[in-house]
Image (cartoon, rainbow, N blue to C red):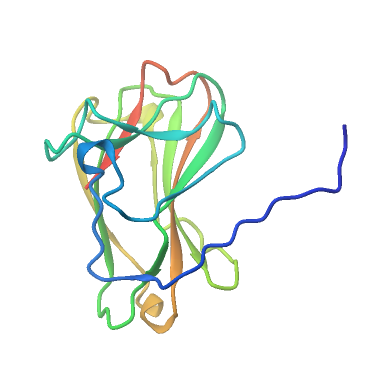
Length: 168
């Protein structure tokens, strides 16, 4: 039934500073905090042991059987001192996968910027291949105490056989 109950998340502690790296080696999070946001457990990111761009035994995988979205948030990140902040990662997807990948920035006050990078997999030009991405982030991030980086995947249908992988 209906309820007035809501759940809010709060990430505490010091932010990670640059350079920040997590390649999900050996299908783990390398001792770092990583948050998962999902409205439904069946539409969620997980870690794969089978596929990785750097052959270290781990990457993120998104392959739900139904519509929905999920985000991975690698803790609070500080870009203080960064002159030209960048996000570098690799992704892989299949042709005509009914999904989208976005990189979003959430500020300390809870507001989000428009996506700094988006990719629609329904028209994937390099199916089954790793693609390296370098995203130029706003220079203004260097003036903030921290931000949260959201790696958001959205499914518009069954992606069981057409997963999205992210690694770095």
